[in-house]
Length: 182
Image (cartoon, rainbow, N blue to C red; front, top):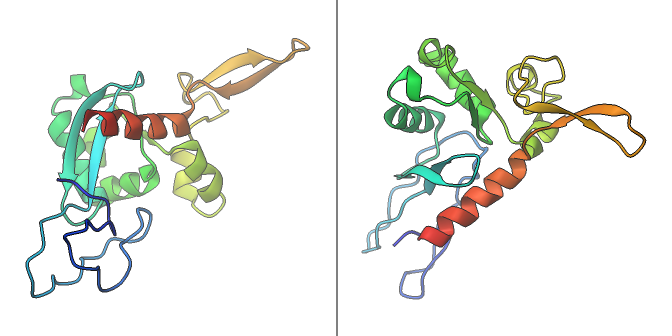
């Protein structure tokens, strides 16, 4: 049985200790388990979905949604360059990119894939994080990602650039699709 962080079933003891880690917080190992039996649990379930919402792959992360775990999961699903997507949209896209650059795996990914963040993360993060602002923009207006930005026209016929994909809806859709499978 899967459960969300901080969620207790009626037969489980009340949770002690600090609140669970939020997904954007730096990774830290969880505190040691108490001295009584407790059903095993996982920190989160990570899914990879196609733009149409179909789940391609999923895995359970036992301790944290660390960027290293995410990169390892992506590498296990997309083992060859031909199979890799052009874009990976994830709320931690800028952190995944930073880890990939640091650990050297970016040399493998940069030939095929660009890590972008969802629009909500970008709006709240872009002013303070140069890496996120420069490389993980879900709708760059400089022509560097023509598949992410399309030309649209307002009611007066004036052209403007808009996002081709609503990345925030994709993240909600992925959660809904995955929850309906379970």
